Length: 103
Image 1 (spheres, rainbow, N blue to C red):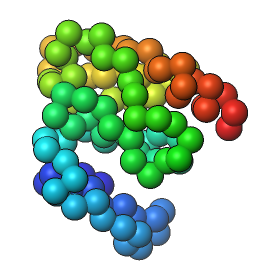
Image 2 (cartoon, rainbow, N blue to C red; image 1 turned 135 degrees about the vertical axis):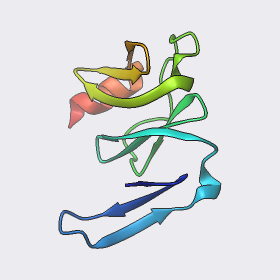
Image 3 (spheres, helix red, strand yellow; image 1 turned 30 degrees about the horizontal axis):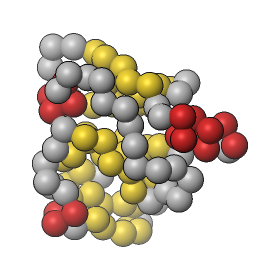
Image 4 (cartoon, rainbow, N blue to C red; image 1 turned 180 degrees about the vertical axis):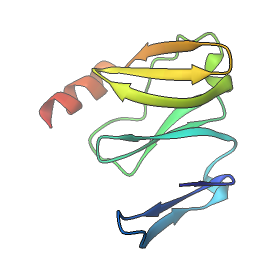
């Protein structure tokens, strides 16, 4: 759950699991589930936390559109981003694709 500029994690029953404090992030725009962790659009870049299966890379060919993201989702080796005026996609890096295929 996005709580201000921090992230709080609960299980499916609503029990607290952990919190990622505000000082880890600059300006969280959106969060999404990815693999066994979270992906966060923070300060115009995508960061991954809580997963050991991927590196921390996503090829940004969005021409600055990541700064305007409102929501995003991962599907079929692509990341789809929704901003106020557009929907765009970015391919996942080869490292991420290979690790996801191993799952």
